[in-house]
Structures are given as structure tokens and as C-alpha cells.
Length: 418
Image (cartoon, rainbow, N blue to C red; front, side, top):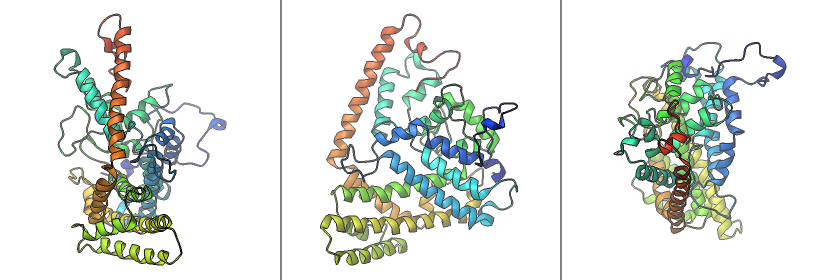
């Protein structure tokens, strides 16, 4: 791989000839910087505010939604981009085209894919994905001769990651077939799992784009020097930022909800097998406990003490984990730039792997498995399936000739309306 290609700031949509300079919307922004702005102002981004991160319909406005989570991932990714571009430019990027502006393009690109990474997630998160896949598998059975085309696998194997790419390349804006018309660099780095819904799972169990966007992806790969099965190096950073955000911040939300206390978290980490003898984990635990002792003498209520202690835990834990990710990326850069790279994720290669794993286990045992979360996940699955049942009746009821799905899956285009 070559950074000159990986940071390709051209767009798929042809430029308008003789563009009127008075209508130029660039106004001092580089092309990749414009990608972040386009994603930020897009309607699917705003809709993330109505999608839960972990805890449903919470009355505490400090508990995170998908939107606040996405902003936090974007913030972490941008911060790492700043360090790579300003502090580690030679080690990571080497000799590149002088026309590229790393100090502006790299942070902007990482922030953009961090902000966009959850756009395609349906309501109720992974449970929503599962509900939709189950519904389509039942109603569009692969054994039925009417549903054997590859396009139907997009529905049976519905995935939020693939839907994200469809949103930004097709569904927004609706006046052409280019969507938000993002740069090739951003689109390439956005593909978390570089295989389609109809491709066999080799290195990646999940898929990152639907069959309906296959031509788009191949065009982007051609312009960025990538191919199926090969990730953009920045995708690893975005995924690591997502891991850091939800492992640390979901723990904070669990305590804010009163499902556990600061001391519950400390005891859990202290006794977790991944933290025993792990230098980073012990540093974070020790520092957090010391801060808690300071706050304990400030005449705070138990709830306030929990909040203040968790805020400091969040600060120190994120700082250590981000530093570990930056170091691991720099140390393994030659592998990430290899077209035969077999690395699956970045966080597990870093010194923060133990702490991150322990935090995920805490989140799962104290937060994700709480009755309120499980109850709404079950209700959400039923809501989605019931709604799709109603839509299906409407579609079949209006069909007058041919196969009922011809109305939403035109034969001449092969594009669904997901």
C-alpha cells in the first residue's frame, strides 16, 4: 500500500465543468475536511440521537446515545490522527507526495470515519440487526427459487456496517447515485470488513458492504490501491477508538445508572485475570483509587463521589489506552501497509489489551445483561418484526404482476431499497 493512494481525495462524482467560483463551497477547506462536514450535517447522523448506545430511553441525559458515542469515537480518532501527523510523521508516513497535507487530512479523515461508523445501525443495535436478518431469512428463504439472486443475501445477512456504506454512497442525497459523494480515501477507510455480503468469510466473519454496492467499492479500491480482504490502515485505528469508547464509557454509564459503583469496578478490575500483573491496568487502578480518596474528603454525596471518581477513571483510562494504540500502530506500521496483512484488530496488539478486555467483561456482566436492557432488546426485536410484517403485507397487497419484490428490486439495476 502507498499513502499517496490511501489518502486519495478525489470523489467518484465527476466534477462540473466551468464551475462558478461564486458557488464554490470549499472556502478554505480541503476535500477530506469537507467529508467530515458532510457527514456531520447529514440526517442519518442526527437520527443517531434517537438510538440507544446501551441503556434504553434513559431519563439521565448524561447517559450516552449512539450520537454521543459517535462523537466521542470521532474525537478519539481525530486526536490519534493529530499525533500521527505531527509527532510521528516520518515513522508512519515516510516520504509522500508533498501535495498531501498530512496535518489536515489525517485528523479529518480519522474523525470522519469515527463519526460515521454507526450510521447504518438500526434501532436496538445488534439485536435490531439480528431481528431484520431473521425476518428476511424467513420471508425470503434461500431455498426458494425466487430468492436465489445475490441481491437477496443483502437482506438475509443485513448488517449495520454495510448499511453505513449504502447510506453515504446511495441513500443521501437522493438526487443522484453518489450519495454524500465522499472522497475515495474516506470511503475506503470506512469499510470495516473488506468483503461483501455474498463473499465467503475468510479473515472477516462479518461483511462491510452489500452486493448492491459492489461496483462502488471496487471503484474505490482501484483508486486507493486496496482489494477484497485488505483493510485501509486507518480502519484499524477507528475500530480501536470504538473499542476504547464503549469499553470505558459504557462502564461509566453503568455506574451513572446505579447498576454498579466505582468500588465495584475497581474490585472487578483488580481481580480480573487480564489485569493481574498488567502494568497499564495496575497504573490506572492505582491512580483512580488515589483520586477517589481525595474526593472522599470533599463532603460529597455517594452519587457525587461515584460520578467524580468515574470521571477521573475515564480520563486516565482513555489516555493510557489511546497512547497504547498510537504506539502499537507505529510499531506495526509495516504490517498494516502490507497487502497480505493478517492482523484482525489493533487493540489486541497494544499494551492496553488487558485493560480493554477486562472493561468489556465488566460492561457485559453489569450493564449489557441487566434486565432493563435485555427486556427492551426482546421488545425491540418484536417491534421490528411486527413492523416489517405490516410493510410486507402492504407490498404483496399492491403487487399486480410478476414477483412482488420486483417493485422494490428493479431487475435492470439490482439495487434494493434498504
